[in-house]
Length: 325
Ligand SMILES: [Zn+2]
Image (cartoon, rainbow, N blue to C red; front, side, top):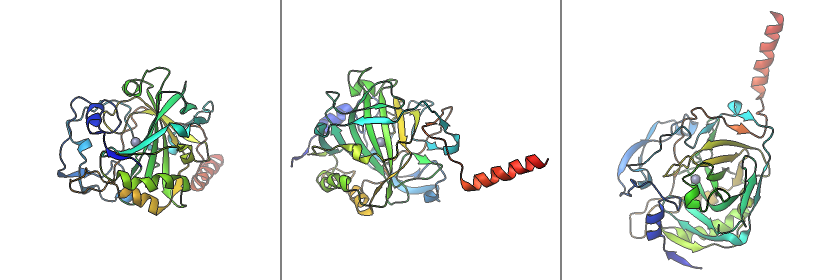
């Protein structure tokens, strides 16, 4: 098993989190304690508005945030999403031989793929053409009460998977696509605590070898379609990267049903470190961006949002009242 600290110079060239060009103004800084809002939401897990955490260098200024109208993540309001009957199921065709390695980029761990050919792609759904798989990574919390970036009716999940693809018809490279319209397609999958995920375990077993920032290890023959829920339903909306450069180039596809992993698997995620070898050890937890405003966007769905039983009763009472008037 090859374990090496490489990526240092490459990271500086390509950017902190996405292996792509970051904003020119972004400069990494050292850790410093500060107080930041936990999330811009009213999730029950965050009954306090502020908590003392150390701001990750990724989010220390100056950040070249585009300030646009389609930032991510968002809270998906199920009743406000619009059923789009023409949306087909997404289709993933992943060749496990394109899986290359896993590396700790100091914010998450990334499993990267050979994207020089069309061997691993996603198509269908809202996508006009195939998008090539570049990498996948996760976001997670310090405990099981929070961790996902997107939320559903303010419900937060312990973790969220992002499968990142780029538009290989319109653009020549991932680095080009990341800055452009319709450049990226990211599939988001919520993780909840439950059954052991046997396919995830192959990845979990290798994570101790990328405990420190900038460490990389070979990771071959892996098909991440094992992370897709059996239910095809999803929401889709136009958004952005959730890490710098925060460009508004992403078609988001958020799967409705979460997948299950067990507590011990998430515990290994939390044992990773933001720190490089020799630095003070900071556990890699709470690596999610706060919710962003929906602005004027519509979230489309492949399914009719179901009324809850209590809402049925409310509707029923209302119609009875109207009939009696
Ligand atoms: Zn992500």
